[in-house]
Length: 145
Image (cartoon, rainbow, N blue to C red; front, side, top):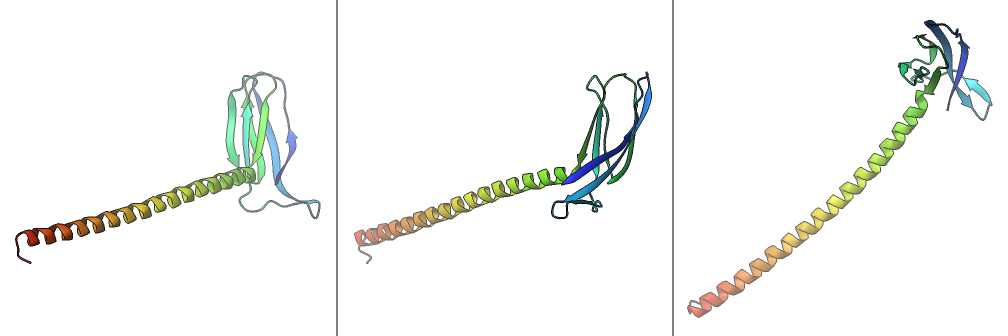
């Protein structure tokens, strides 16, 4: 599970303000009860909305760094930080669901193809049997057999 530590965030209430946020992602080890350095591929998704709910910043960052945006609207801004590890977990969960659905569809299709081929074989055998009886009766009627 990812942990986000927002080290510093400076805000000033003026018309146009440059805001800087520093962050660092770390993994928490429940057994050791301590934070570990970020692993390769762990990063941060930052989304900032102004007081009018308009998205100012929406970007993927690395495991440690800072984000900067300029606020043109005074008021309370929403800063949402998401670890991409949770997105990967959701992605993997979605993949497992799709894989299960695909497997069910494949098994269903395979079973239908099997039954269709059995029905076709029975029809061919029945038609062949009927043709043999019909030809036999035809030749017996013509007294060729």
